[in-house]
Image (cartoon, rainbow, N blue to C red; front, top):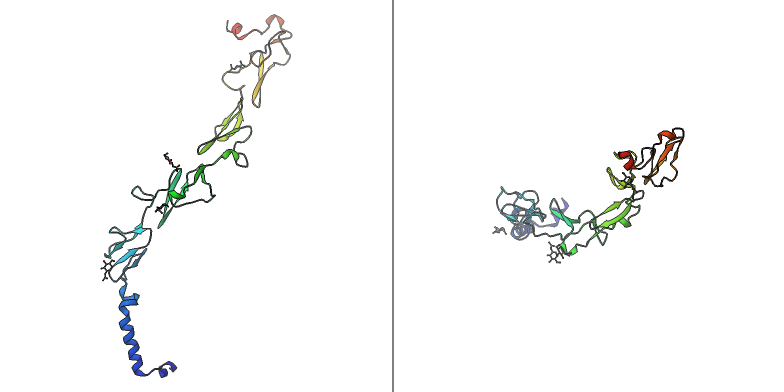
Amino acid sequence: TGGQRLLAPGSLHFLSLLTLVSIPTNSISTDCARWCPPKSMCVNATACRCSPGYISSSGEIFTSVLESCDDINECGPSSTVSCGNFSDCQNTEGSYYCTCIPGYELVSGARTFRNKSENMCRDVDECQLKPRVCKSRGVCINTQGSYTCECPPGLELNPGDPNLCTDVNECTLGQNPCHTSTHCLNNIGGYECRCRPGWKPVPGSPNGPNNTVCEGAETSDHIVSGTHTNQAE
Ligand SMILES: *[C@@H]1O[C@H](CO)[C@@H](O)[C@H](O)[C@H]1NC(C)=O
Ligand SMILES: *[C@@H]1O[C@H](CO)[C@@H](O)[C@H](O)[C@H]1NC(C)=O
Ligand SMILES: *[C@@H]1O[C@H](CO)[C@@H](O)[C@H](O)[C@H]1NC(C)=O
Ligand SMILES: *[C@@H]1O[C@H](CO)[C@@H](O)[C@H](O)[C@H]1NC(C)=O
């Protein structure tokens, strides 16, 4: 070829000699162990070094072909990593990261960090979130790491949804609060005791859900009236 014509046979020999001489100082092919397992690189012809985040059973550098490089659990009990207060350590393949525990967040708005010195986990004030976390008439109370919804009288937290206040149906509870001469009408947040149809409040009967007492208009000789104590007789 054209290239051959540019070099004298003697200089070709000289070049290959140069290549041979330079092998020990800068060639990878002969100085590098070829058996280095995944997640490792050769150090020289007889040793491999695990990639950062990985370790073999005989350490970072090893000389046995039987070794493998396994993920270091930086979050494990013997680890030197410390994420700090209100945080969780999450191990990953070859690495790790720290997150704030639920109910806490980094002041910076970042999601992760790597060192206790970067831990800025602060309580989230859920009561300032939009939309409001407590639905209906619930009153939000912020707590460290969480919040609660408190319900006004006559409402209670929904057992299936701790953010939702639902009406208590006082009329279906075991103890109907109304006098037997009335019927109970549930409403949101309370109840009413109303005279049965055609009945009227007993004159002078005190008002109030538990005290309304009614009498049947046509059966005045069988007035159903009186207080709870009278009934108990
Ligand atoms: C290869 O590297 C290992 C670890 O640094 C060292 O102990 C060993 O002596 C080296 N071998 C050669 C032939 O340089
Ligand atoms: C982390 O918690 C410990 C124990 O609760 C406390 O003594 C320390 O002051 C806290 N550190 C920070 C930075 O809040
Ligand atoms: C965490 O930060 C401290 C202080 O900046 C530093 O001394 C330490 O080496 C760091 N640790 C890690 C695992 O990066
Ligand atoms: C009305 O009666 C209910 C059930 O007996 C009771 O729990 C409630 O305290 C009473 N309310 C008043 C204002 O007396």
